[in-house]
Amino acid sequence: MEPAALEECDNTCNGSEPETAALTMPDRGTTDKMAEMFKALGDPTRVRMIYALSQQELCVHDLSSILDMGQSAVSHQLRYLRNLRIVKRRKEGKTVFYSLNDAHVEQIFLQTHEHIRHE
Image 1 (cartoon, rainbow, N blue to C red):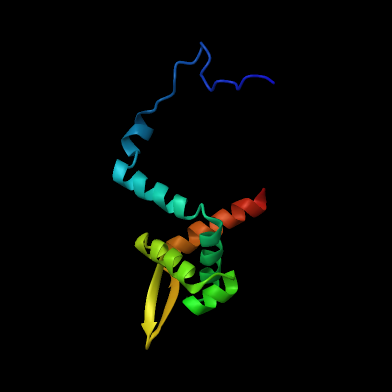
Image 2 (tube, helix red, strand yellow; image 1 turned 135 degrees about the vertical axis):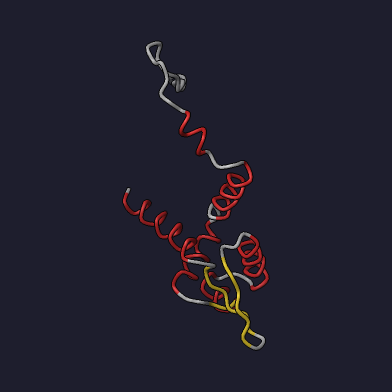
């Protein structure tokens, strides 16, 4: 088995002009939040949950049924997604309905789905 090739420039490389990338680099707080968003999308259960919520607003009972999970486990995941502002809730009487927080979340999800299907 060959050792992994190192990703290095060859001797003739004088570099490009990284100043633009350096100047437009988001601050650490922003990149941390972005990484947390991708971490949330890195869990298959949450991905299935987000997919279901991209189709329609659902309550915990509905999500439990769709995902074949207990309501407490679904509630735990929804709390995590709410804290990251990926989903929002709406209360109607004693029932709480969940939906995606905004069009940005839906677009991230749909673009990722399209990218996977494109491969």
